Length: 267
Image (cartoon, rainbow, N blue to C red; front, side, top):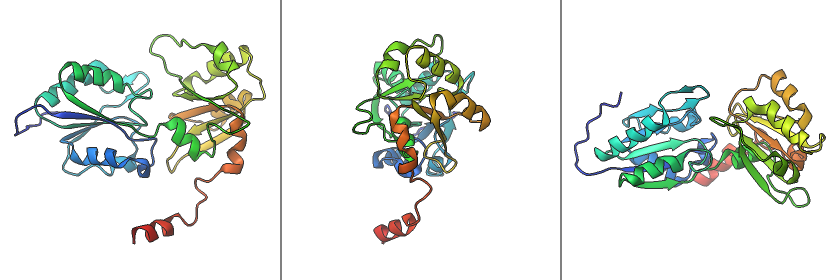
């Protein structure tokens, strides 16, 4: 699959690029330049179809994504592949959903590359805990409601090791990534360690995409909402008083003048 031939000599460069949470318009200019400049694109599962449509037609692009229990390519083999192709002179765009340094294993890949004396540039992206939550009309902080926000991964390869007591007592916004399969544990542990059962909470499926769905209620409602609506990954879990603002601040999917405004700006 990767039998490519590079004509020029020398070592290539790797861009670790954050593709954001799904909306192609949220790509940074630097991210788009990296996509357009690369000899090879290696992309993850959460890189949306809208973003993949921006890949140059003459640039080989390969899927290297992972789902729970199904890794297209193991991480250590992917690390080796990045090193091998860069050493052969290929410039590689390693494209990740969200931000490469937020639950994206970007640091692991960068360490391997740097240890092999390969030039690496990190291109930050909009992480889902900011982008998807904003598209749901939920501010992660709001004066009088929340002065802090904590991002937590709901995925663990071995042990789900979290200080639940600290999380439950923070009185701030909690955003769980990749937590749908751990939803019963998340709600049970937060309640067990003192979180008020009336705390507002939300589930955001496919945030920042055309198929985005948002469900809000109390933390005790989350499991039932997920089952009733047959939610699938990627789904974010948001817990905190700021969820109360979702209905008042809903904006995504309600805009009527967006297209005309863009036309005026580009005229």
